[in-house]
Image (tube, helix red, strand yellow):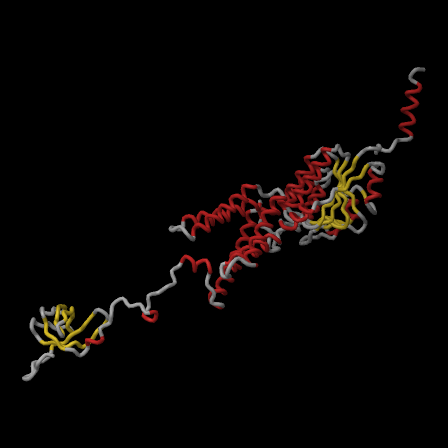
Length: 440
């Protein structure tokens, strides 16, 4: 008899299950939008940490992205699989490429009608298919993400490898698989199709839960924009062009301000995104100081070390050596072309070099002469005081003058005539004897 009330409670609990969402539970909603890059990873890391600290029951990632950087997607995937909190991908319109990979790393996937997931081929910076090594890594990552979440890996592979033949889903050989909401539900890549977030929370049993939406801060939005693979080379190009143009401008003006601002934005965005530390900024500043010192120190050592420090700081801040190399190549090429145009077309000269390069010349036009040209001696006659072999000394009107003959030997005490003067070089010729020939 004692157990009858207890059995009655168990019976009614089984017959009329209580909703799995108790009041007081917290569910986090985190948007995953636009391009996938390192800035997004930094934002999601903050959101997951906040959810863990507050004991959230689940995190819903509302995904609408065309994809992005593979390395960033890989880090996000590790982040999602490492948390103990239940993770749900809510694909609201599209989860393509890296977005599909992120979705596959969650515990459950839900999609809205008309949404799609897939088309996850890995491409390089020029939009071409990446090399075999990169493709092999990406295929393994997609297959592993699907397998670990209990989904058939063949469909994940078909999203990345066009050699997989799935014509029944519109992805024959030569085409990448992109699943609709209905197809994803059919192949087990989706747990359900819902119209909106409210319907999703009801389906998950969280209609009574405290829903918290994590929004990106202004700094995180700025960091995501600045670390975008398309924006990085633009910033570096503006930075280098601004500094190059400033070298041809008087004073410090708009080009220099734009150049420094672009470089500061680059480091700010990467610092907020967690890609760069203060050591990268310190290294960059040290490099700039060394380059400036090169204009006042001989040898070229300080400038060389400074240039290496600047380039190293950029690579240290980027987190992607290949993309940074391409970005720097673009920036340096643009700066070189502008420098050539400034010098060859516009005839400009670097103002900084004007302060350290000697421009004054001791030309005759400016009144400078290295030796006085004795043109007043031409035509005068004299006598040799020494033999001319061909150089020697003569006397003309009582003045001793060092001269050279036209090439022939002239003995001492012979009459001569000055025929040419070239600075300090005075040329004489032997004067033939004359009956009444005096020497005046």
